[in-house]
Image (cartoon, rainbow, N blue to C red):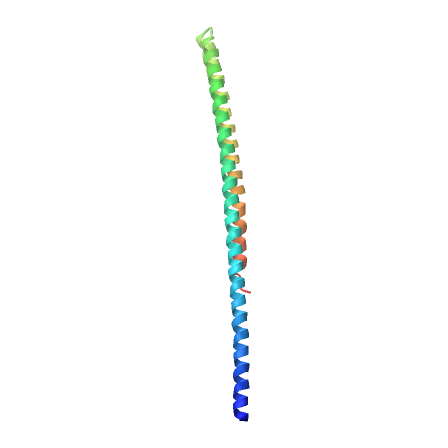
Length: 143
């Protein structure tokens, strides 16, 4: 009877240890799922933030482009009127030359400004995603 008691005690100990290990494993697995869900939610939030930044930047760039186009059109109309008022061919040539230089300088300044806006927009839009890449790299590091 003593052997049976010992066997029963050993089985109960084994069952208790197995249940404890199983519970521990299930808790770790549940925690891993929670961590993964939280990571995925943070990644989705970063993506949405990045998309919103990109959309806002695109609107700003578009507005800047439209404003420059309008200004250029108005300056072109004014220059055409000024050209028409020229009293000699030489005066017309000088006005056209001045206008061409001014127009080209304005175009170069605008191109630089648009490039700076686009670079800043790209940088700003990528920041939230870069942070998620860094977070993923941290998770991938061995413990």
